[in-house]
Image (tube, rainbow, N blue to C red; front, side, top):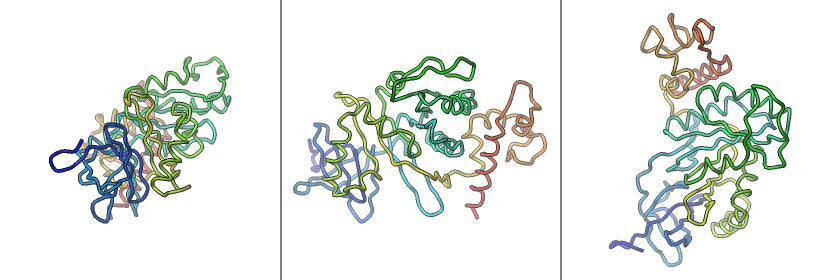
Length: 316
């Protein structure tokens, strides 16, 4: 229903180039174009649009509560907006990059979006067991870490490093009632996850492809799917990524976005400690095991140091 100015409310559910697919409150889907040369809309945006024959024009993007994006030296790539959760999907095979995982977590923390780490392919033991053990520091930091398998599950061997009994239903419960961005590297199982809970996803993708005239390239765009008829739970499928730039993060902000580093930074002698070389650094002491019952993974500390150096270079 249009307002006095002839503007209709809508939700951006897919996009390719300058074209976006907007869903109206009554379920209609309309191709819309931005007003001007550059598109400022992303999937998840609430917008006001105006009819132009059988299509529409985006007239206004309503205020966002958040926007998850990555930024390198050349460009900024937005994933989606107005998110409740980011589901970082990893696979037991191929081996996931802990640096890429950390970057995704930092980006989510910067936008105050709740992250969930999901390790898929639980049926691939012992590969899964080794990957689950690598995620121990993240469980210790308080992150929710779930295990899934979209194949018949093979029980893990007993031991402290193994996950407790869990299955795909636990993840489904965590997703319920929220707008969830599914993020992860290629091969982690994002398409399998989407197709598991949105059986019509492939049909919808083809429909969007035809509507936006994007053909096979639709797989490189972002699409929102509803898990339920009431449209209370959304899954946003994003392209797989190999790089995750954080050039929008200031170097001195980095420690505050890494829970294990932040927890020990309060013990530093200097308030502006970089946690790299200063005397009396609580973080460095924790890495060296000089603080009782406190430990920071050497791998995590190296990731911090590498990121600090990378982000410092972008400032000059």
